[in-house]
Image 1 (cartoon, rainbow, N blue to C red):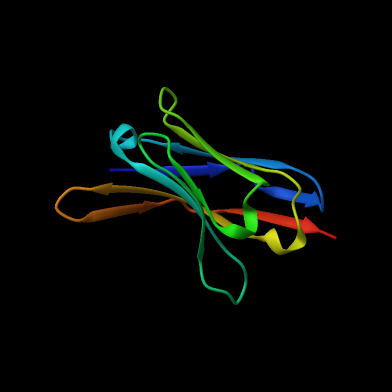
Image 2 (image 1 turned 120 degrees about the vertical axis):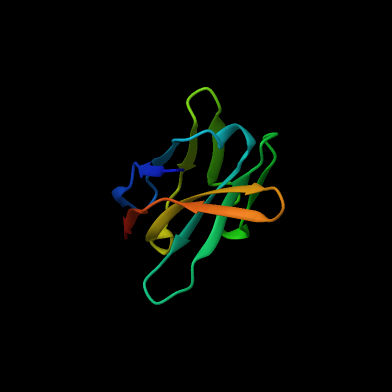
Length: 118
């Protein structure tokens, strides 16, 4: 059983910072790619950032230069450092883990709310 537990969301003023954490239980973390997605009300869930097992990162254009994804394999935790937050960053943020064997398996956290006030 894989569990992903997010924390670190909250209310922040525009221009502020937050750091999201996602702690993974189970034995998959070391062989999983990790990512953060977000979903704003009335919108589809979108990919924000990913980090592979080897540490390669990828970001959606709207957060490049402001957000940083990282992982601590010793702690089975992935982080999303969010700086220079904008009201349009307001969304529920979800942690994702994926493992590829015969096919791709995806695991999701319960989400954490980020609200940026103007």
